Amino acid sequence: MEPIPKSGLYYPNRFALITLGALEEVMGKNGLNAILNLAHLPNLIDNYPPTNLEKQFDFSDYSMMNLALEEMYGPRGGRGLALRAGRATFSDALRNFGAMAGAGDLAFKVLPLGAKLKIGLNAMAQIFSQISDQHSTVQEFDTEFHYVIHQCPCCQGRSGEDKPVCFIAAGLLQEGLKWLSGGSEFRVNESECRAMGAEVCRFVIQKEPIS
Image 1 (tube, one colour):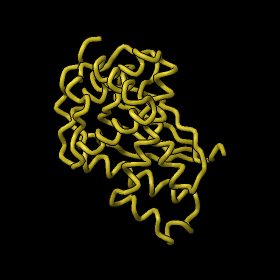
Image 2 (cartoon, one colour):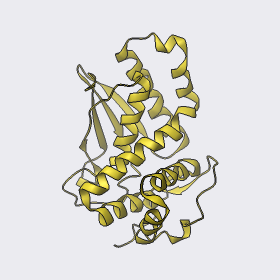
Image 3 (cartoon, one colour):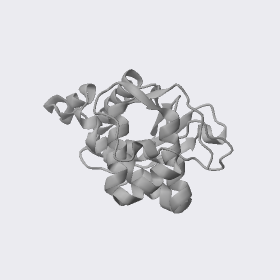
Image 4 (cartoon, one colour):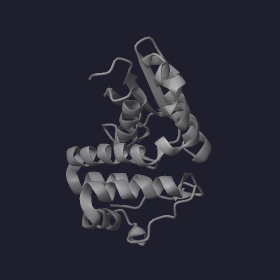
């Protein structure tokens, strides 16, 4: 597996730390160490990033971890693990962050579901755009929202894929929507992926929950 060249685009250390912790939770310490070795990131074994918001974790390293998951567990197994890691990342990370904290307020809780999703998704996009180089925007349509990642760490530097690969991001969105809605599950499909040659990574979210 060839290393992906450094991108000069960064995640905050804390987000990378939380994703690493989530992967360790999902696959165990030895499993994660094997992934880090395969991803040409042995420097991270027993040496996770600090818990600060300094933008120092290169998107290409994040992308390499994602690729190593697929290589080691196959596309289907890797996808399942990436979704679970994305969900755990939201659970640990975003519910404590500034703009999202308002989602716990009583005024927010009494809003209709569509308004909650709109406010929450926009807040999430804003947080990512502010504290990382992952510029994100939200578009609203009649029956769905589109969550658009213009610079995506999950597939940084990858090309020639025939299917979308950003399952950590999809899992994070699924868990975020579950939290915003008070427990409903939503369908999140990545319809465009930069690894397939698209301009952006686009996640289509149905407004109607599936459960």
